[in-house]
Length: 76
Image (cartoon, rainbow, N blue to C red; front, top):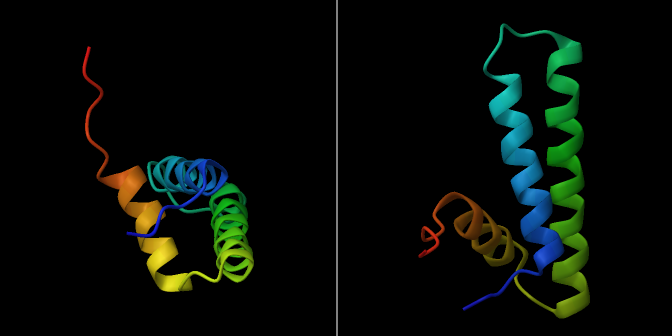
């Protein structure tokens, strides 16, 4: 299975959090700007990491999103 870097997972988390914040209030261009910037940074990082590691870009993106959106809860 494709394993994204910790940096890629962190960028994905940032994009997800920015989306949550942007969509929690009525739309404004300024309100969505952080989400757009975070999503662009994540997508660029996916492209760069895929090229650097020879990994399929789509699989890498999906692995990062799965790690962020469907992660197992931490055991205490």
